[in-house]
Length: 350
Ligand code: SF4
Image (cartoon, rainbow, N blue to C red; front, top):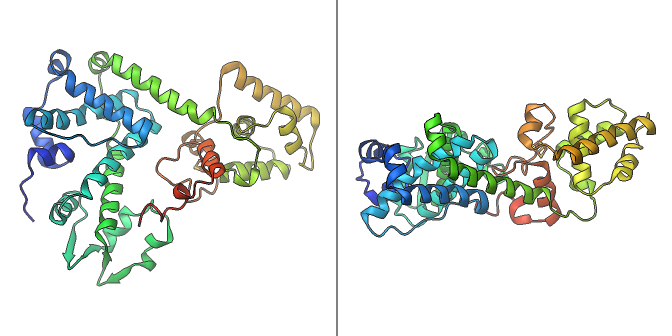
């Protein structure tokens, strides 16, 4: 399928091969960015900040070629800014933000454009009447993280190795593909010169990133409801109650989590006292030590990446597998809010 991508298309979909070639041919050098291209760097920073704070990079209206080029060139700069910080939560958040923007754009595109874009991303679909035929292999590869029952292959209309889907579903698959590609590609290599040139922007992004994390951590959770705990914490709590000797990492994660959701030392002791071999003196010492570590050193409960690295992320469920899930406290907070829109995969993926 041949299609001529315009500069507007390239600005909207800067991961296209044509867009990459355009950037290589006409894009700014580091010197240009330092001396005369404030607009590009500011837009790049905005992309990252919007992704952190809103979960979506907002589309801009592109009135002339200067704006189109600024938009296009800001994409690799935004990737550089993210790479300078190289934080997993930021990379995921940024990837999601860009993918949301692409998905929103695509809903107003002609089907032909959507199909060409899908083809360029390696997930070619064929249009037949109002239905898109997609190879079941491509379908499976790009829906691993889409957990609702309506995404399961057994629930699809499957004919001769092709899955028949609606356009809205094809766009959802493209969104997933864009997000996973960005996560795969980042961080890109950055050197000291780049770190130097962008130092002010990096500092600002880091501050906003931490403040965004802090918002999660300073939530008032109200009454503690253990039935709403994430699977990892339910598991660790059950192990603790059964008298299993938890590793230091596990004990630290559990105690810090319990403390953060509102249990004081006595409350944690009470929960731990249900263990058959509970020893008040030892438990008190351990809890005080950990809570002391938390308040003394400013530690907060570890996030999902840390839990996974340390082998204590147990039985992640569909909510855990949402792309924005990065912290057991986020899980608990979503459950507490009873936010069905976010919990139910299918509602926002019709
Ligand atoms: S993904 Fe996070 S919240 Fe879910 S079980 Fe693992 S550590 Fe817990």
